[in-house]
Length: 336
Image (cartoon, rainbow, N blue to C red):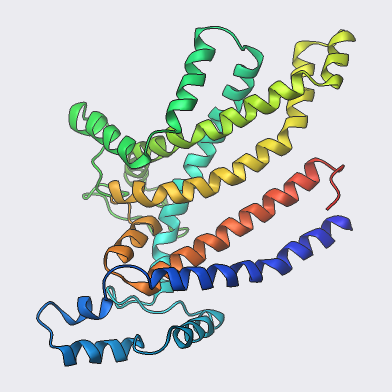
């Protein structure tokens, strides 16, 4: 019963969070350099033409009036129309969101599958060259820009070795797009039994997923290591060791008690991957939400940029909510 009350309180606070985010992003977007009226009117437009475009877009009205109109549209489920694509932003996001989610979920899965075992291993074996190498990698990865690492990966594995496909999107140009089910090309190709498209989608996933994993996996590894070190020196593990229980049982007890902290860092990892995907998608011409956001910034396209931040805020809030609920389920001692 306490669990459902806690979940209800968190869900009730979610609209307030999104309202605050909408206010902040609306006014910050207006601080971007450049006037979209001039961009849309063209470089040789007269002042009268620019004023006409500004009136048509509603940019001649006070900011608070523009925000109230924007908030009303959001509450009706309308995120506006892109001034560049002339498409409803909701449609653009629906087309691009699966590509971003495919990239993030693959990187998150790989980060968890590699990061947790590495963290446990380095916590158990705290001496030796391998442990120092893993520790040094964890420190180095946090200092590397993800877009720079992506360019290095492209240069090495595409230009020099020719092992990976070029940064031209999610599929080879000669491969047909599989029938849309989820919007994720690898999943849709697998469901349709389109093996050429499936192989191409997997091949194009390798470099961007490896980039994100290499940069952000150390978050999981270092957190798992520090938590496991704390658990292995705790009283209950010391007692289990004194009672003659095997090393495997001691590790199992320690890992079970370390899981709430690991679940928390996995939720934070999603947020980091969502931010990292913005520039990585641009480097690989991925065609997801990240590249869409960058194009919106460059062209001062307000509606898509506001929608991108709002959608990412929704996803992040939901993930953190699930993390909190999972934390409560994993550790019943916590009182919400």
